[in-house]
Every structure is written in structure tokens, then in C-alpha cells.
Amino acid sequence: PRAPAARFNFNQTQRDRLADFMRAVNTLQNIDVATRELQEILANSRDPVQEQNTRLQTAFEDTQDAIDVLNEGGIFPVAVTRLVEARNLIAQAQSDAGARRTLIQQAITKLGQARSVVATVS
Image 1 (cartoon, helix red, strand yellow):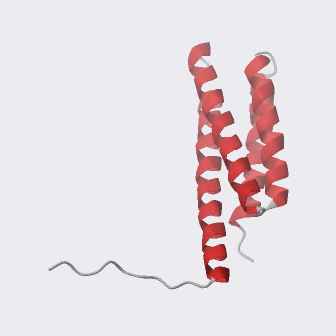
Image 2 (cartoon, helix red, strand yellow; image 1 turned 180 degrees about the horizontal axis):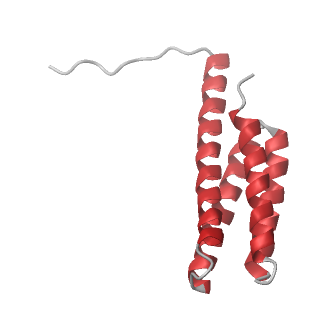
């Protein structure tokens, strides 16, 4: 016979904290993916434009996902502000090839600031 599945009896406060923890983990993963994609563009300046555009779109989508997840939980408003700034810089980089590298560097900085807010244990 199979062992019964583990049962957890969390109270509402514990469930809320667990949900916030999962949102934070999800957000950190989104930030890491977006940052990695942007760093790849900077590291490989000879990549075809199409590959750069794909990386920028992935970074944009992951940043937007992080914003959505934090807003859904109503947590880390300062991180949300930094993520919105990063997303807007990524969007600018998508349409402004001339300033692309500078905009990407600025977006990476904003993503790092958001990450440090979410990852800081208080």
C-alpha cells in the first residue's frame, strides 16, 4: 500500500506568508532570466539583430511577469517601481538601436536594485 500524501495544516497567516515567499522566489527567477538575457546582448555585440530582439523580448516578458506576481500579492512596492523602470528601459532598447547598449546597462542596474529589495531578509 502507498503511504498517504503529506497533509499540511497551515493557518491563514502561514498560507499568506508561504504565498508571498513563493511570489518572491518566482520574482527572483524572472529577474535572473531577464538579467542574463540582457547581459548576453552586451557580451555578444556581434549577434544578429533578430537574436538581440528575441533576447530583449524575453527580458521584457520576464520583467513584466515579475511585476505582475508582486502586484498580485501586493508586496515589495519598491521592487515593483524598479521593475517598471527596467521594463520601460527594455522597451526603449527594443526600438532604439543606437542607445540600446546604454539602455540595457541601465535596465540591468534597475533589475539588480529590484532583486536586492526582494532578496533582502528582514
